[in-house]
Structures are given as C-alpha cells and as structure tokens.
Length: 364
Image (tube, rainbow, N blue to C red; front, side, top):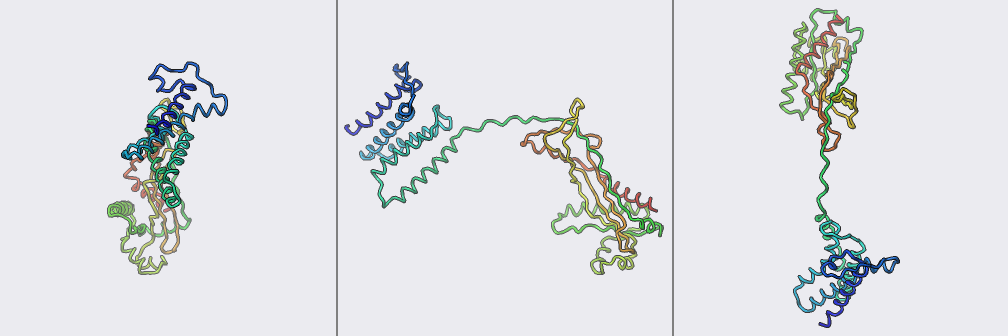
C-alpha cells in the first residue's frame, strides 16, 4: 500500500491544480466542487501550472502504477492499457472523437515521462539499439492510428451545371494547286488515277482495317462515277515495292496519270471554345474550354509523268456551326463534360471526295 502513496498524492495534486485554474473540467461537474473564481495564468509559471502540471503528474502517477503492477505479477496487458491512455487521449482529441484540445507539448511530456522511468528500469547499453527499433516502431504505428481515426472529410459541394448554346465558326478548306495541273487535266478526257493510302502498321485492329477499306472504296467510287479510270490500289502498291520510286517510270508500267494520296484523316479533330449563349441569349464565357470533335481529311495529288506534286487539298467538318446545346460544369469532378463526342456525318468523306472532284473539273 505504501507504494501507492506517491501516485495518489500526484493525482490529488493534479486535481487541486485543475480546481484552482479551470471550471470546464468534466470531473468537477460530477461533484459540487466547482471553483467560481478560478485563478488567471498571468505569468509563465502559472501558465505551466494551468496547462501542463496536471497532465505531467497524472502521467507520472500512471507510469508508477503500471510499473508496480508489473512488479506484482499482474498480467502486462493491464499495464500496457494504462500506458496507452495518455497517447490515446491526445489522438482522440486531435481527431475530434472526444472533446478537448490537442497539444503536441502534452505528447512530448508523456513521452519524456515514459522514457525517463522505463530507461531507469530497463535501459542498458547492451540493448540500446533494441530500444531505438522499438521506439521507431511505436512512432510509426502511432501515426497510422492517427491517420485511421481522423473524421471523414466534409462532403463535396454539389456540382453546378450550366446549359449553353455553343456556336463554332466554319473552318475553311485548304486548297492549293499548281498551274500545270490544268494542262494535265485537259490533256485527256479519261484520266487514270490510283488512290494511295497510308501504311496501316502493325497496331491497327481488324475492325479499323475494315473501316479503312470501306472509306477507301467510297473515295474510289466517287472518282469512278466522275469519269476517272481508277486503277487497283493494291496492285499499284506492289509495283511501288518492286520498282524504283521514280513516279514517271511507274506511270509507264501502270499506265496511271495521277496518284491521289490520302495523307491523313481523323474524326477526332478538336474544336475548343469557351464562349456560349445562355438561356437569355446573352454571350457568356466558360471558365474552361469545351472541346467538340470534328473531322478532317487531307489529300495530295501527284502527276506521275512529271513526278511532281501538283495539288494539296484539306477538307474539314466543323461541328456546331448552327449551334449546339450542351450541359457542362466548371467543376473538376465533372471534367467529362469538357469534351463532347458528337457524331460525324456519315457522308463527310463522300462530300470531301466530291469537293475534290469539283476542284479538278474546274481546272479542266
């Protein structure tokens, strides 16, 4: 019993200091002993008494009791539970799970008390490194406990959507021809041509190959309908592989006047815009760019006999030229609304081929 006198005295001392300086301690509400005129901490010593003395003596008393329980052969579980109380209380206060004010200095006081008393009992140079490993382990898991106990973050603000009408100016087609093209086109009533297409590569899927084949056939069909003699592009490709790159010599072998090379095409041509009209018809500006997808196809025309490029043609499909209604949000969580996947007209490539044929007929 004598061994418990010091812890008891320390607990009483801490309770008295609480009573002298504080009125908001829950323990005092359990008994009708509130101090109606608490002392003010107007210097550093009284400030220490008010804020840290009671925590210090309470931790010392708790540590003494834990050590006595170990000496008495009481299962160590109870001592561990006692020693975890100071740290746990601060963690719970930090996370807001219990009322109170978290203070890093309180944690340092508790750790200092533990280190002092346990080093006197267990510390030796032989197990110095073991203590370091143990201390680091405790610190790491203490941090993980704090991370797990933090309250849920506040709910996200609801996403606010805006509906607007976006209008994009039609992008002009790009057409370039050399003067000698007119002479080439006038030289024969039935010009022969071949469509040269991009190398598909190894990463093109069978589905994409099929789509490309349909596109190429559409272009060739329009030229055939316009009176051109359309050579087999696969046969022409084999001749290119086997013969020289001199188109004039290839022209003699294949009896071809023009090579129409499909350089590139896409149905994902981006059109970015920020201005829109609201429901009142007023012009507004979005905080972020909204991207609509259009289409583009680019051709190059080569004179086989002259071994020279005589024309370049790029045709565009611009979306929303008549206005598109779109619902979007400036919120980052609604970034899917910043890009609009619109259907490309199925006849875009047919119409592009007809535009090209019209340009060639003008030169004739």
